[in-house]
Amino acid sequence: MAFGINDIDETQAPLLDHLIELRTRLLRSILALGAAFCACLYFADDILAFLVQPLLKAGQDELIYTKLYEAFFVELKVALFAAFFIAFPIIANQIWAFVAPGL
Image 1 (cartoon, rainbow, N blue to C red):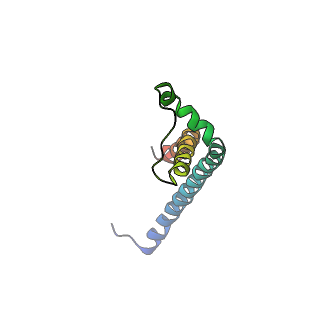
Image 2 (cartoon, rainbow, N blue to C red):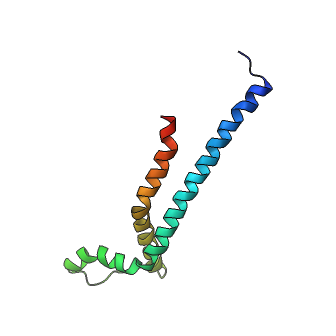
Image 3 (spheres, one colour):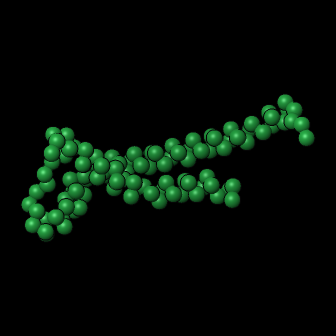
């Protein structure tokens, strides 16, 4: 069976539709993660204080940072992890909505 130019043109539209849908799903996931990250960054100190509670009970009085910028990056990492934890249901829903029609 030989493919002609018309056959190739007909197969490009579904591919473009899938890519547009993938782009939409990725943008929704990134926006959900970004919104959750902004909220978690505001509460990063409180989240970190909650996560450090086992160290305080073990007798460690404070965290030791070995680099000047490390405290800032720890807050960013905590906020990003918490944001992913909060936004995961939306991200998983977007992944499932993209994959499910193909199954």
